[in-house]
Image 1: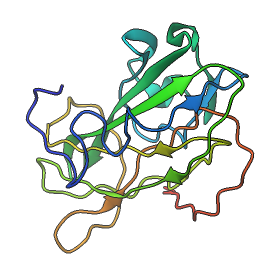
Image 2: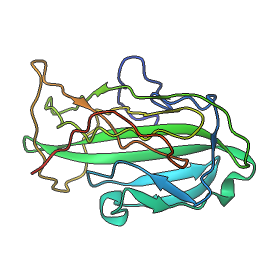
Image 3: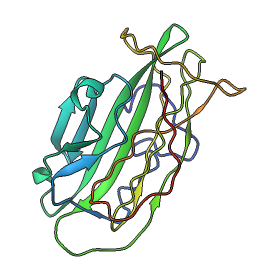
Image 4: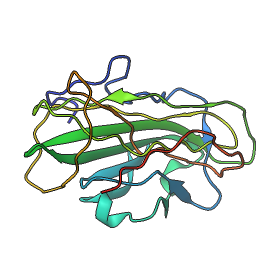
Amino acid sequence: MDNAKYSVTDGADQACGWSDPNGIPQQIPEDGTMRTSGYTHDGPCEIYMGDKLALSYLNCHESITDQTFKLDYSGCGDSCVLYWYWLGVRYLKKKYSWQVYKECIPLYSGSSTSTGTTTTAPTTESSTTGSAAAPEADSVSTLSSGSSNETPTTTTTDAPATEIPVTGPSTSNGNTQSRPPSINTGSTTQKCNASRKRIRA
C-alpha cells in the first residue's frame, strides 16, 4: 500500500501519520487489551508487534465489535513498535473510496514508568471521488504514562464495491475533518476532557 498512489494530510508522515515510532515508549497493558474509539467503517485492519503479526481481520467493523478488545502482546518481547493499520471503506455520493489510518507506537514491558502527554491532530479527508467523508468519532484515551498520537493518513484510491451507506457534511472545498479510532495501549487513570462527536444514522 505504501507504493500506491495516495497522499497524506499536510504535516503527517507517510509511514506513521501523526505518531512517532521514536517517541516516548508506552507500557504494555497488564490486562492484554487495546482500546480504540471503534471501527466505524468496513475494511481490513492489522496490528504488528515489530515485524510479528498480532491481529488481522478482513473486516474489522464486523470482527471487532467492542472498543476494548484482547490483543496478544507476546510478540513484543521487552520492547517493540506496535504498527496499526486500518483501511476503512467509504461509500459516499455513489462512489467508494478508502480512508487509510496508521499508528506506530513504541512499547515496553515492565513496571517502570515515564511521563508524557497525549496529543491529537485532525486530518482532512480527500478521495478520488471529490466527495467528503463524514467526521469520525472524536475520542482520545489518555495513558497513565508516556505519549501517544492519533495517526490519520488519507488515500485517494478507489475501493472495491462494498456498500457502506454513510453520509456527512462537507466543507466548501469538498473536504471534511475526520479522525481515526484512538488507540490506548495502557490502562487509563486520567479522564480525557476532549469533546466527543458521533455520527448517528
